[in-house]
Length: 363
Image 1: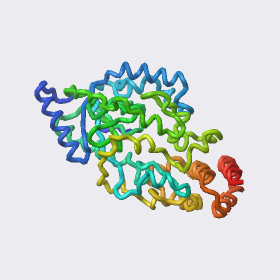
Image 2 (image 1 turned 120 degrees about the vertical axis):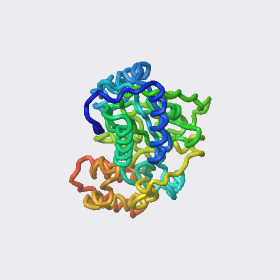
Image 3 (image 1 turned 135 degrees about the vertical axis):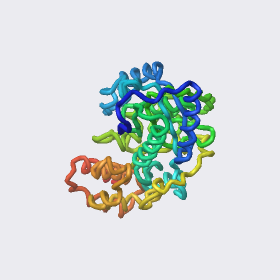
């Protein structure tokens, strides 16, 4: 997150018609910057706040203590930026071009499946830079105003805000969905004190479909629109810092960073459009890499190859932990056993524990 303008709350006063014209202009400027869609929402998140507090009370956030710490701040934009009246929400496609078919990678137990959003460069910088450019354009047009840019980096209910802004509807897997491009996109926000006209929410088009619920390897989608992070593979391989629960390890399969099953199976993603963004293109063959190859990287190689990637933030230790689980679930082979044995004396207790488990799986 970053504060993009001066904290002066005063800006050039406009009439309602002027703000309506400004809203049209903002959407045009956003699309010119490469955002596929731009919408505007108000800040009333009262209903979503009740669901959030209930979810936290049930402990579904696991050890993501920051979610409980922030509490209702996530659903009250004015507590993050005083004076916030509107949220400008954007989405940008990230599905990498020419990436190997996800189902084929998942079906090959010797491969490492990495969530498609993470096979390229870290999206935070791309979105932040473009949102900043959009803010600068607004500033040039209306003068000083109070605003703040967010790219999945602060307590923001980005899916709910995007839904209210008319960018799509919330699917039963809790992600935002659109009829035009499915769900393979990132979201970003600008909090602003400009009283812009708001957009209308879209109708839900999931109907009776529950493919995302049925496909979840760990059954983490415990009810429509409700995810228990403690069972979610994305949480376990990215957010969770400790030992992956033994009973869940076999269910991870070869998913070593995130999980896309609920998106891969979603019927609306047949309309998904690949991104032309160079930063989102696959790097280092991460769409089709061998588990043994990645497990053999030294810490120096990890930092060298994954610097600037979303994967880099989990660190080398958790990277090896995840890969050890993937190798434990892989087809038996002398090469895999040997690769695991080479890590038996790893300096990390966490890594050694998961390596030992994997070796026991291979007899």
